[in-house]
Length: 212
Image 1 (tube, rainbow, N blue to C red):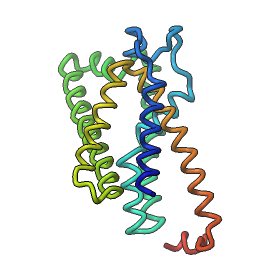
Image 2 (image 1 turned 90 degrees about the vertical axis):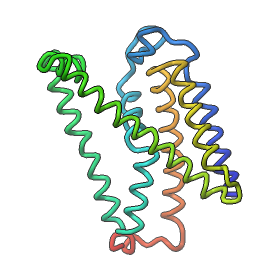
Image 3 (image 1 turned 180 degrees about the vertical axis):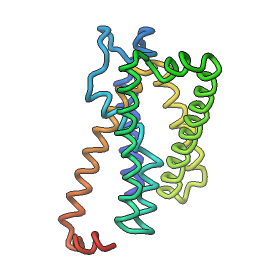
């Protein structure tokens, strides 16, 4: 029953992601995330997208693993990593104040094409690592949920990879922003329900959590 619930919820999220992703996007929408009317994405769209991009999949599993081995302090220690939101915001603010439209622009002015190429190489490798790491998390979850199916891990990885590529190719950044918002809303609903169920359960004890 639990496995069927996971698969059902996963399928609904995939279907919803495909429905909200634009089938066609303008050049500005594909690369800059603007809507069909040419307007830039709003603040909360960007906030939800950034949070989704940073915390989903591997980050959630890392936090759970550290919490399992080291209690609440392990989870809080990992959460402290997201203080980089603040430093990132400060850096972006300084770049914009200096007239730079992106990190690449800033590096290009100071270090030329070599600086931009080195940065793009590092970011490309980092993003590639993130993609494969998150796909591995998907595979681990489905392998645990469907232990009787030996191919569950590999098939789930392939399906998620193909679907992610499909809606990104359809709408570019515009599609990514929309699906990020949808997935974050689903996460918040599920998290709120799970948190309430945890707190009201008979075995919950706040003191035990704080001293774990």
